Image (cartoon, rainbow, N blue to C red; front, side, top):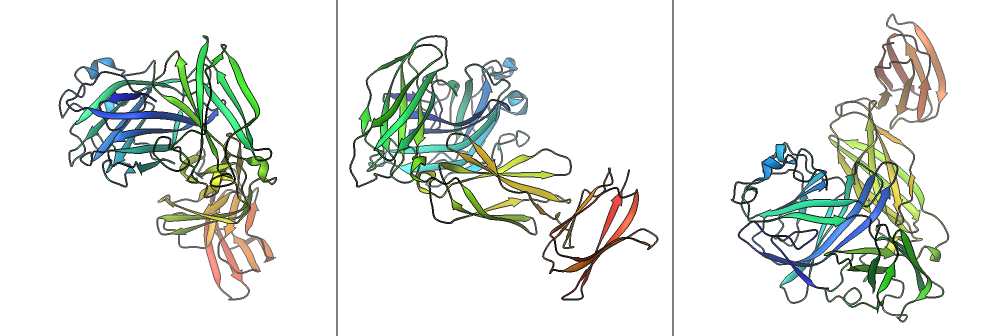
Length: 486
């Protein structure tokens, strides 16, 4: 693939004029769309590239817009990045889709920053993001990958083109502009890739779709993954480094798909015969400065779907710890951690990649995630599992008490506005008796020898109540207050 100059160590699409003093070289940029929800317009994608090693870069920043909103309001961008203090602030980024910060960008272990240092009022995207750096033999270059970028688009139809800026800072405060490039542009859904690996016979199926109104010419490379499920072509690694197959040019008519069924691929039993395959699609006409790539796994090798064995949630001060285990995984990409409290909607608070080779395993896999949660009321958690092809499934919902709540009773909603109250009994030995008293001490309701984890009360009249739990084994009494406001 041809090498392209950028004015920053970090970039998405290349080939635009530089406005800063430094030049940095990157190449082999790729975009992998993992899922595109046509109902919510939410896109999840990865981006990868090769960059020159520069240990001096402390921070890097990415800003994304839709084409129509790029650099609006435009007047704020006159002379942007021209000097060390000309960096975007909140009023410049108000119409942007996302801002991503990378801390310790020049080190061996960069990580996603939780703050946009030049202006902390700008929200920095962190949810689910993972940044990886792979050293390339020779020491001059390295491959960078940002995984699980989540963007919600204003429209779900048509070709989705994103424009962006990227800049870097070598200053300790993360503000001074070292180098920058404006006007980066890439499509999130053209061409669209789909496919999977077939175990017997050794082959793969694929589909490449041209979503545009004009004819498109492409070709593709096929790689075997080296076992880490990271797209790393050209890095000199045993499996990813050299294509095992390169196609001839393929012409795709507008809004059409070319496909291949049970296409054999070269190889032998060792090494990597059971590895995933990576397809890299290069646009020849019209030419494009980036490639699209997709991982092909072999779901046909394991007949069972993903099976959750258990899922638990517990609080330790401000940390809410989630633990879950899968018994079987097929074509699994990973897990979105979702949280909800009060009457709010579900929100994504993190993403955990599958531990399995190529997303498939018949062995038990254990996972762990910690959410920093200082919410005073009850929080609900669930795990959204997503396949390589974007299909999803959910765990059961688990609840955790609010930060600072000492009781082993989780009561929600509290206050209740409709007379329905839910009680979850956390870490209480069964069986036990449950009694509900009104504010005058009168017994309203009683449940004897209760042995369930949850109790739902309906049609509770407005007022203040005391809930008492009597534990048989320990003779312990646990109390909680309930308010019904309707």
